[in-house]
Amino acid sequence: MNVDLYGIPNCDTVRRARRWLREAGVAHTFHDYRREGVDAALLAHAADLLGWEALLNRRGTTWRRLAPSERAAAADRGGALELMVRQPTLIKRPLLLVDGRPRAVGFDPERYRALLGV
Image (tube, rainbow, N blue to C red; front, side):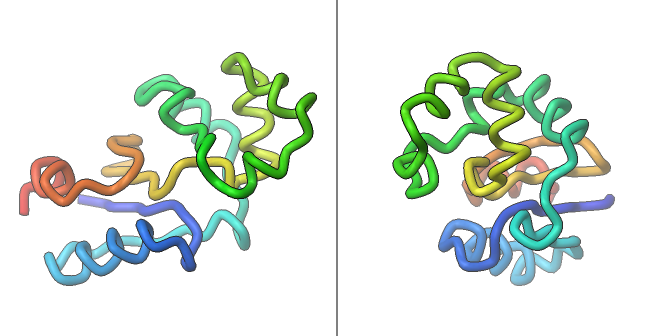
């Protein structure tokens, strides 16, 4: 099983997820949105499977700092995905991929346990 976790390293939720994966003995690769960005095709695939609205973090500092016109542009799937590619910190974290397939956004130990069989 190939496990990838996407997020930013200083996010508390990402830290908890990474710690949980380590403690559960789940080998994984971490992708830092700030350093590596996010692939538009991967984000679109995640939106197809998980819903674009689930991916868009409207509670964070980045969202609050957006101009009203930028927020308005995120009112539909296309605009939201474009904005998240430009500003990956708008993506809810972490994003968990299992065998290349987006499986969860956010961190819930029980959900991770079920998805990863640990």
